[in-house]
Length: 249
Image (cartoon, rainbow, N blue to C red; front, side, top):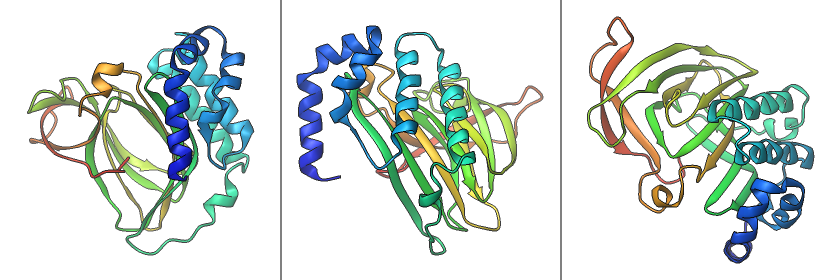
């Protein structure tokens, strides 16, 4: 996306902020028209429109965070199963290469909120060690290949170091299956391709925690290092390490 287009979208979002805040809650149909200039990317309109419809239900408080992200995940699984994103899945990548394709981004659909859909191509050896996410609701669908996935719920706080986690699962995830993450549920996870390259179909929503947290440097990846094995209840202390690099998701 060009710098000029991003600058236009940011300016438009700021200018229309009061109206967008009102419409996203009370008039989704009109909101979709007003917010249309803020949606970009080659994603099929049927898919991006459905995603925004689910986002609107969440903004209207009709869905909890877990219900919201589960509904998004279901629609993304459908998109993979029905071939809506097939033409992007054919891209070839080299060993160790990490490639992203942004299919849709809705910048500033509400004040300081945005979501995007992305494909992340993972070559063999492109391992993502355990990490937590701050201020993000996300889901990922394994669209090709398979991933070894390890997940923990966050039961402590990312403001404390060390913090507490509860083991959730460690297993192989194949197409077409999803991985969810909220600020608590499966917030800490890691994954790596098994034997062949893999493709993650990703959705992220940022801004749901409010302007104060989004305007402070409290978002993005934090790498997490468990201190030993989980106890009989699955609980383990973990040390919070370095932040992720820019653009990691």
